Length: 85
Image 1 (cartoon, rainbow, N blue to C red):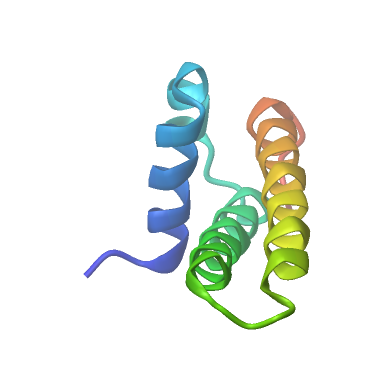
Image 2: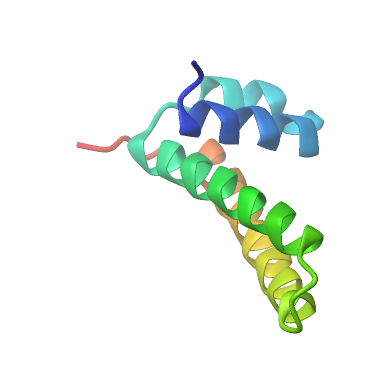
């Protein structure tokens, strides 16, 4: 079974294929944390997208913003040359 950060990395690669090589090479804990958060945000976005609750459109918009922010974070960590301790 694939770990949650691996699913997040795979989803990032599908969404941003031009970043594939960088995402595949990235292994810092910060990058993996972003991958995990990205997967969790996408799962929540998908659930809210299917929801018929009155607040669902607000939640969908919020999670779309979170996903976009995490994509930027992933790019930042994938291009960072700073090694973690």
